[in-house]
View 1 (cartoon, one colour):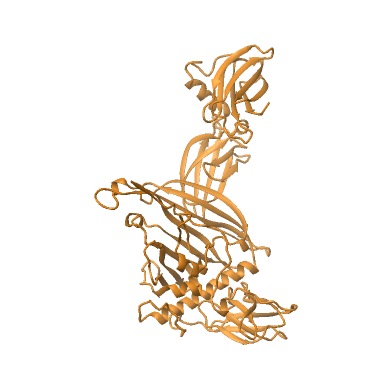
View 2: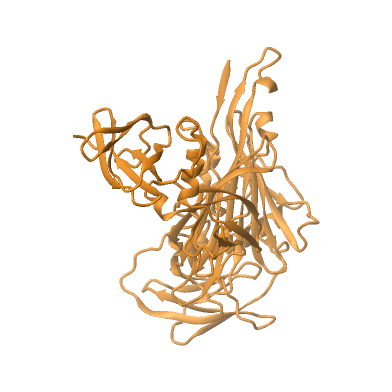
Length: 559
């Protein structure tokens, strides 16, 4: 008996951040009316250099956050002041926090002291079931630094939103390996306030319910704020990761569920911090509690952070490796490997571009395709529309026949072209061109462009029952497509060709799954009427066969 496995997929939608403690309070309390803002700069006390990405918090008499902002690339801050603001607190990953009474009469300068991130004294509040470890204090010191870095990301996103271009993708792998068999890519445009990637539950909810929704069979991925939620910290254990030779200058904070339970899917992973640049690195995780054969295919995910020159930290890449399919019960045990059908896919995205109102812009180091298009006789094929199959990537060749497509995610692509005449039928022209895009590189290729005549000639030559040649002198070719009002192919629709008096010239038959039909032995200079019908719907088009190829789209309508 087959037992279906839940489909593993992330929920990539923005949700409110859950930040911990007073420094990460997300609720801004009501206040009467704004006063003049608090202005100033934040610097490194050792080098005196400005510190971008520091968080400046205004607190009330109870220590609650009433206003907040981040410093720009010059270390400057501008924080709205309300009547109940009493103190200022400044946080920055890799530096000791500072707090002092609020003063708005003159610009305030903060000089933050750099600290060893693993030696800071912090209050340890580990889950009760976590084992005692010698590195517990250092792990929680690193967690507090992570919280400061993540808070800067959240505040900057709301305070200084950008216009973003995101690339969302899905990849299918061969078997359980890592070779990409196919990928699709779509472009998405959003404001930074919407977030590039976000979890669908709070950290406390993940602890209580796990990372699998039993009702919908949906697996969730964590976001950075999950890791700094007090509820998440109460249900997870933290420790320092074993140093990784492939990550020089980085230190990792590992996490795992304090109390794993049967039937609940948890995660375990590590967040890495660059101790030299004093910046967030990346978060890696894996799902825990899955069947051993599913776990063997390494389901999990990753997201990475990037510090930009304008002082803002963004999530520039996110991905989830997912396993779906069926596990079957076998006679030799609960499950049999031979009766399992599992598939590995990866879904995720990357930030391709980001632009801010002040003119600062950033582009990711992605791939580029530079295509030289030519006709059969070697001339530049200016105006050719080039597309990459199963993606939103498209470009038009310039006067020199060059088409360039930037921001390519790494992976395999197939190239097709859009003939303007075939575009009326929604038919792309496939080409033999395949290539693999690589990060921060340019792939240069030459492509001989086929035409609508080439496409039709190939169909005529393959239609041996009607003609043995596609170049019969004096004949015209007809190519058409029958579709429904919503643009779908009308599979099985009947088509015919009549002269203008209504006499039947061709009783063509039925269209296939693509809705296309053709006829290659019509006299040129002849006016014709093309008809199609299906289930009571009809379509009619008149044409005059003046050129070698005539294209006729037919859309079925109710009578």
